[in-house]
Length: 213
Ligand code: URA
Image 1 (cartoon, helix red, strand yellow):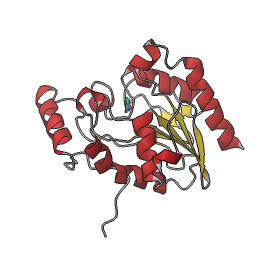
Image 2: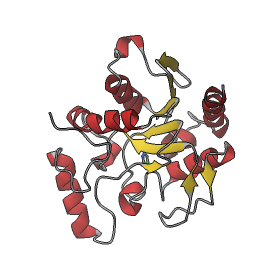
Image 3: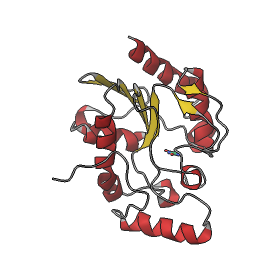
């Protein structure tokens, strides 16, 4: 059996719709990253933040998860508040920012049309997510942003969705790890105040406490 690597190749072609979407985008914006976005952070991470998929003008443009869009502003600021960053986040992949004890990945590694991957794409990308989790020998907390990320992570761990429903602040013990989830820090969720900064920080405070316990 071939071993699945934690990172998809930049030119991954497993999902025909996403592949075509990226090829079309390369025509329109040849200077953008336009490929499967690799995870970013510390290979000894204790915290793995799992987003949904690259945003078109964020990670798909810059090549670093959550970098250059609204969701990233809140995510990186919050990571900084809880001591998971070194350096200053400046919305560019060459801003020199490093993550300390943390890594950020996405449940789906290629930008989907309208930010909405279809079920087959989420399933196709899951082996990379599973391999990403398996490669982090020190990981204690998996922090899923949004239901798609949560559900795909539950499946990657071989667990039943029925027994592990998503909720903001939901928490499940899985062996040595805790699966923690939050509403996604998207512009829509923060503008509608479904997710406030305080709610997001409370989830990170819990993640930090679990890591330090
Ligand atoms: N950028 C990402 O990389 N992932 C998300 O889920 C949202 C924005």
